Length: 318
Ligand code: AMP
Image (cartoon, rainbow, N blue to C red; front, side, top):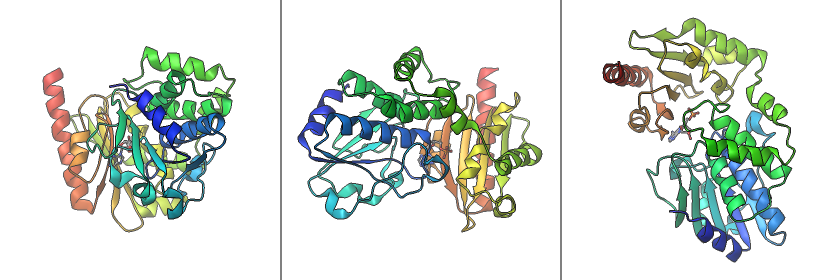
């Protein structure tokens, strides 16, 4: 159901609006949050519009940085989350202290946690949904609004490669680019890596293991990350690397965290992997998910499950 008019009415009603996004943010999390915040600030200069999160933007601070918020700010406030499917992943737990909660998202609605939602899990990016909202409700879309939204769409479509990318995506992007944003600079900011990150990508190619089914995995240990001076968020640049190889159709990248547990990335060109991720403290999209593993035993189990769904997928599709 199109709840945009209802969301707009709520925004009109509140004088403080606080926007949240997910932890370990990617360009879509930051872009959807920033694009909405900037447009609302232009339309409603008398309202307080704040971006909240745990100051974990890292290398993505070029998209947006967070405002200072305290619990007092949430009294009588409208809270809007973007790009965040479940409460466990909302960055900054103060979100629950507001008066009314709205969710704008493109993940499967596994936890309908808000008072009012707009969820379209076929949209390739939450930033595309935010852009739709701004255009449909005649809210301002200037270059400073379009910039983070375009970054979010480029990020979550894998530069317009993933299957959810549609004719509508290009129509939205055409309107965003018409504001005069520098799309070359945005694409470079998203794609360019440091030497150390490039070496980590090379390690993934060098040491990953490929099962005959077409499932593959790579483990990035604390030692490997420390040696190169790359932190676990910066290691995300390796996640799409195995997918460039024709024979690989689903893969895991396991990134060891400082406490010895693993952040798990799942990616796929066909086999559905979010149901697997959900069994390991995770979730996400059908072809791109994340999870957590407590130790090497769980790492092995996760990959065995991936091999299984990859085999089943090939049996059905060949
Ligand atoms: P990542 O591998 O971290 O880039 O995440 C891929 C997708 O899965 C993104 O849409 C994330 O929002 C989602 N995701 C990642 N980790 C989790 C998690 N622990 N729980 C639910 N969704 C996740």
